[in-house]
Image (cartoon, rainbow over all chains, first blue to last red; front, side, top):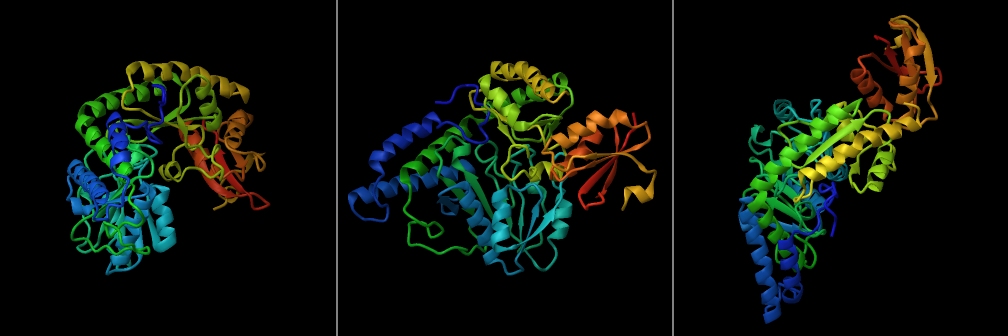
Length: 371
Length: 84
C-alpha cells in the first residue's frame, strides 16, 4: 500500500478497494477460457460481459463499442492505426504537438505526421487543427482529451471536422476522472490511471466508425482484441471505473481545490518558478512546475528523502537528455520540472507538507551550484 | 539570421558546449552582469534543452531573447540582450 504522500497518481495509483475485491473474487471464478461452452468457461464469459457492460455504462457508450486491451498504449496504437487503416482519405494524421508519445510512436510506425502547435498553456486551437485537417491526404485527426504532463484540457468537443474524417482521442489521462468529450470515432484509456490493475487498456470504437484492425487478428470473444482475455483484471478495472465515476464529483472538486493550493503556494513561496498548464480548465488532480537552475532529478531525490514521491519530466533526468516535447511545444522552462498528482485520498495536510518542504529543498539544490 | 551581422557585436560568448542541462542556463545567469545593459551575451551549448530554456529564462528574468544562430564551429548559439 502506498502512503498518503505518494504524489504521483498520474503515473500509477494503488488498486481501488472496489477493484481489489472484484479482482480477488474473479481470480477464482474467472480463470477459464470465456470462449468455451462448459460451466467454467461460461462463468468467465459472464464476468467478461459484465465488465464490458459496467465499463460501457460508466463511460456512456455501448457495450459493443468497448474493447479491452493489454495496456492503454496498445489501445492508443490499435485505435489510432485502425482509423488510419479504415480511412477512405490519405494516411496523414494531423495531431497536436502535445500528444502522448504513444500517439507519436503509432503515427511514426504506421502513418505520416502533421503536427499542430499549441499555446503557452498547452491548449490546441481547434480552428487551426480543423483547417489543417481539410487537406485531402489527411486520414485521421488525433487530439487528446487532456494533457498527461500539464493537465490542460483540450477543447475536443469544439472540433468541427469535415464529414468522413474520423477523430481519435487519447483519453488516458482523464478517463474516469471526467466525462469523455464528444465527437470521436475511437478513444483510448488506461486502467492503472483510475485505480485498476496494470495491464488493462480500454479501446472505444464508435459503432459506425470506419475502423479496420491494423494488426493481425485473432478469434477471441471481441474481434478487435487479440490474446487470451485477462478476465480478473478487466473485471477489477471495470469495478474501479464504476466506483471512481460514482465518487468523482466529490473527489474532483476536492482535488481541484488542493491543486489550486499547490499552484498558489509554489508560485508565491519558491522564487524563479514557473507553474505551467491551464490554471482552470485542467485535470483536477495534477500540476506541473519548473524551477530555474534546478536539476529535476535532484529535486525528485531530495523530496523522496523527505517522504514525498513526485515525478520529474525534466530533460536532465531522462536517458535521452532531450527535453519533454510537451514543455518544448509550450515554450516553457523544461529543466527543474516536476509533476505532482494527487491520490484519491489526498488531504490538505498532504499538500501543505509538500509546500512547506519545497522552498528549502529548491534553495538547497540551487546553493550547490552557487545560485 | 546572424545575431552578429544584424546588431551590435556580442560582448561575451559563453562556452557551454560540454555542459549538461541545466548548466548552460546557470552559466547565463552567472555571467549576465559581466556585460553592460543593452549589450549582447551568447551561450554556446549542445544541450538540446537550451533551445527552449534560454528563451524561457529570458521571459522569466525580463531579458531580451535575440535569437539562435551558430558559433564558428557550427555549435548552436543562443543570443541574449541584457535589459536590466
